[in-house]
Length: 238
Image (tube, rainbow, N blue to C red; front, side, top):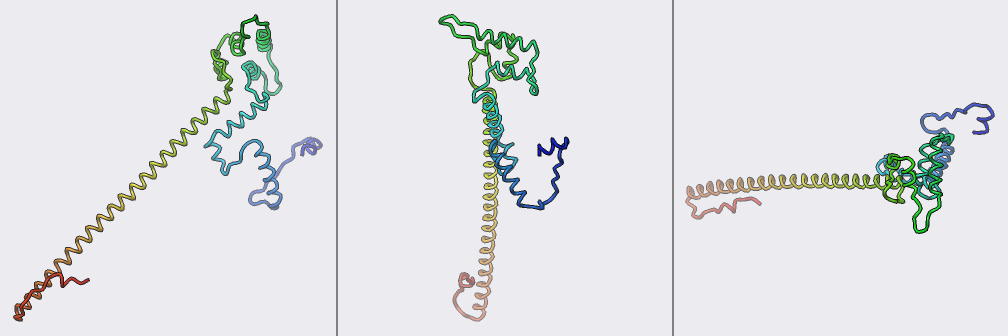
């Protein structure tokens, strides 16, 4: 595509029709190649929303890019100072900034007397800039010699926030499930109470009906002159 674009001195239009592809095999090959390239930089998750739910994937990608740029090492404050004060397109650095960089490099290159430690990059940048604003902006404290880069600090912070969100969502889901179980138990309890009341009412009705029938039979026996009593339990049908 680049060769043809250079030849005609114009961008080539790529047309993608809506709906299913006319040639499924070509579409499948394109998707496979795209997936192989994408997997070299970031894991492919089943859903795009999962990248937002877990920011560690983006943080890992940023850390990987930073390591590739600085040869698998954390950038020093001086390197960050150069990067922040230079043009991303041309790499141009203004004269005042270049003068400050030369001064920093000269201070770090000065010979050190025996028994003394060489000045750290943080202290050198802080002394030349005369302000802690830059170091604070890049996440470096001038009072501490830390090898943790700001990308790692940001990554740890985002992971902590993500884990907190996961725990909060898990707790919310647990409470929701417990509320559902409690509602089911309440429903079962109400149904059992209603069933017990219905059974009690039915038994009471059976007893009354049996007693009424026993009284009627006893009255018939007395009229007919038949001795003996009929127990109500004998009149309850099974």
